Image (cartoon, rainbow, N blue to C red):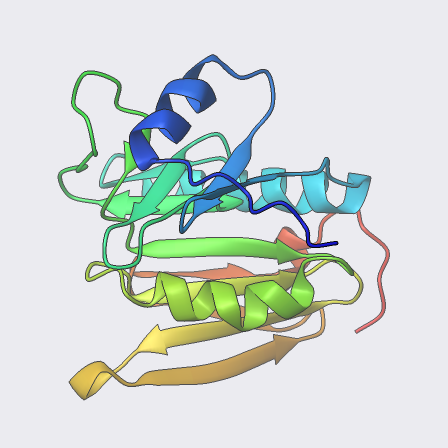
Length: 191
C-alpha cells in the first residue's frame, strides 16, 4: 500500500488561507508546515532583541517580530523569522496587504532543540538567496551563545560566534552592537 501524495498548494492558495488563519504556517515548494508555540526563554529572547534593536536603531530601520512574514523569491519560501530588520524603503510582495516582506537586511532566529538543526542549515541556505540580506543571526536559547553569518565579498559568508554575558554582538549591517547581557536579560543560562 502506498501513501497518498500530498496535494500541491500554490503560493496564492497559501497566502489566501494564511491571511485568515488563527495560527502561522510556513510554505515551501507546495507544502504548508504548521509552526509550534515557543518557550518562555524563546519569547524573552525575542522581546529582548526587539527592545534592544529598536532602542538603538531609532527611525532609520524597522524591526519586526515573528508576525511579519518574509518571502524568499529565489526559492519560494514563505516563513516567519523571529526578528526581521529592514533599512530604507520596505518592499512587500503585495502592497495591498503589507504582510510579506521581501528585503530584510538582518534576520534573527532563536534556536530551540527542535529547530536548531534546520535553522543552522537548510533555513540558512534558503535565506542567503535574499539579495538584501547582510546578516543572519542565530540566538541559542539553551546557552549564552550567538552565531552570525555575514555576507562578504563575492557572495561568500563569514561565520562568527559570540559566547558569554561579557561578549558584544557586532551588527555592522545596522551600524550597532548588542551586549549579550542585554539579549539574555532575565534568563539564567550557562555560557
